[in-house]
Image (cartoon, rainbow over all chains, first blue to last red; front, side):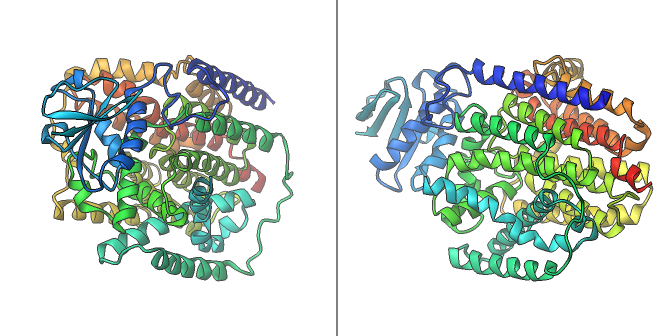
Amino acid sequence: MTRKFLVYATAAILALALLRQFYRLGPPYFDAPETIQDHVSRQRYPSRDAIVMARRASMLIPRGATVTVLMPSQAPNYDPTLYFTATGLMPRHSVVQPGAKPRYIITVREPLDDPSYVVQNEFDEGKIYVKR
Amino acid sequence: MTTHVLFVAGFLLLPLFGLATWRLEAVRRMDLGGRIAVAGAAGALVTAVVMALLSLVGVGWSRTVLFVILGVIAIVSFRAQRGIPGATGSRAPLGMTQLLIAAFAVLTCYGLLTARESAGDLHFFWGPKGIHFYHAGGIDVPFLANKANPNSDYPPLLPLLYAWSQTVARQFSWWGAVLATVLFLLGSVAILRSFSGDDDAAVLLAATLSYAIAFGFAAGGADPPLVFFETLALCALVFLDNAFLGDARSRDVLAAIGLAGAAMTKVEGATFVIAVVLALLIVRREFKRTLLIATPAILILVSWLVFLITNGLIFGYGGAKVAIHFSALPKTLALVAKASLYELYGIPWIVPLVLLFLGKPSRAILPLLVVVLTLCATIFFYIHLEEPSWWIAASAPRVLLTPLTALIVASAASVRLRGDAAG
């Protein structure tokens, strides 16, 4: 009996803790999210925007083209998770590291200050640049 | 929507390829949930091994090839177990236990479908690997060698299962990948419940895994399937030993499946295998039987390492040569201890410990040793970095799922209802 009570009480506590965890990650609570990263933090992760941008770019950039994803302000130590993410969303393209000077650069949130690239597409989450 | 449904269906088909396990005496006596979970573990392992072998011998994974081979395996498995009587127990079909477990499954589904539990590693490398493997029709060596893909040498089971589900759905489903987590969670719970006959421990495992997976953002990563295989191995070794369900053959085969699956899922799976082998040698002192149980896991691990070395893909495993920073030990211990509280005053650990001492801890020496050894292994991994703060914060809640699950198994073992029932 003690055992059962302890387990059920713990289950109730863990259920409440689970609800607290979900609540802490912020609204909206019942809308269908756009990506699997939408609510893993209260603040929107750059990788979430990388998913959105890579998904769009996969339809806007020719197959086989070299491409990378970055946040320009992080130069030269770019967050690798942004181009890691693109490898899954752009399997028909050649995703490379930023240092490889690819034909296309997808920037997350920020503009790219590199005269050798020009904007091809603009979105709220970032821009797609192509080599001049 | 069809893609998501078919992708999840790929996971739901896995038990068909492991139906042969229903021939085992212990499995025959289980309830349906336990039998499906055991077949699911065996089926997942069979599917991954078949796909890996096809890739090694250069046969591409077309839909036809995989459907024919796995279809034949399913038919042979089905015929092998046909006519064998199932469980004769009189457990209530819908009781409080099932309702509570279902409630946690629903909560977890809510978390998964509102993107509140997703593992970053899913879209950093587990998902991309599965997608590239599918497109290449095999284990994609050029992609693994690409520096834009991290952790190339991580064991391949999860990407292989993702490639299988993608073969069923013809497209990758990120939502399907995170939803698979709830299947692994329910599978772990069903195995513990069926092997131990302990409904309370099953509820505790469901509640703990639901919370810890959400807290550790583990959905879609390799930790849920790892815990699933580990639960099978531990439960087989703990509850099939001279207990009501016990027979040596069932114990050895099911433990071997669990260990092999764990070794093929994550690097930590290999350390789990080592921990179990050491614990078995210390507690049971049966060298030959222990070696037999661990052989499939060792074969899989060695094959994978040979494949990696042959293709110049050793990265993470090469970390074994990295220096150990004993100076980081106090900080590591403090940070891991903090992470283990799960922002819940350590309740997930304290409660199974209390339950353990409400029973007879001496009955649970084996899983307790596994708890201690896997905790030590976790600390050992972390002190390979001089400054491990970020690494611990990012991974400890997930990595600790292994010792935490083993502790819950130990708490059930301390009561051992089936053994008591058998008198």
